View 1 (spheres, one colour):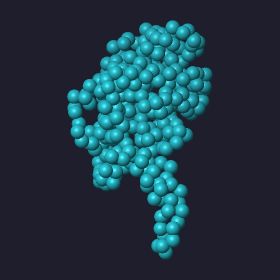
View 2 (cartoon, one colour):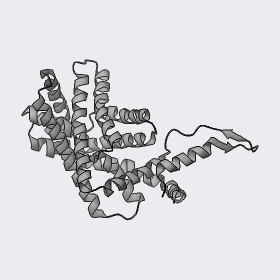
View 3 (spheres, one colour):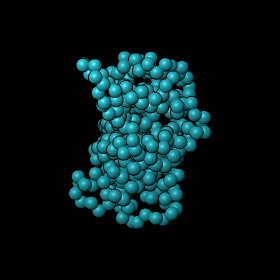
View 4 (cartoon, helix red, strand yellow):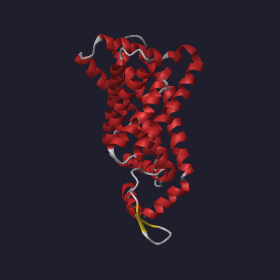
Length: 299
């Protein structure tokens, strides 16, 4: 079977020498991005590639992705510290966190919230599924992300590199993330809905990043949805792992079970819905016929 890249190259070559109504050949530039059906098909291929890796590779890539989340959380705080204008504050904070996501997407690391998009695409479009492997991989990605985020937070604390102003700003970030806990059951479900919105946006970041065929396009595709979810305070479990790891080690502002049960748990459920249904399955269903045609042309 041809890969999505090979198929795209073939389509680009054909578009360079299309024929007009008069029979004359017309030179047109090749597309510099994947079309939506190619993107969804590529999601399925990436999902299968992740599943085919040995468990040790899956776990190591999950640890790496989690570590990038803590680096992104730190950078988002450092860039926005001392900024009074809200719009610029949100822009800089989002740009900082986008650095973490860019490292995840470009390196091929395994982020729980990204595979919420990739694996449902594989489930919907590809055959030969072994469900046990799916759930094992999903669980290892989640645990690996938490461990990776925490390990980097420990190393940063041990380095003593950050100033007191950073921790003051971090405290404000944590209050912003945990404001829902005072609302009881209603707050828990608000975090869940916020998680749906967050991974809807991150799913679209994966969509735009996959669409781009050069490194600049991939960075831009990552940044725009990430800036939006950070500015909106939408609850993204993988991102919060980075903030909460730093918060847990640096203060007793909140307990570990408050972080996990009052934020990460409902946010993770929402992330599954937002990425799996509103991005992966929605586009898979919408472009089902196009994807089937694409796979036939590749075989």
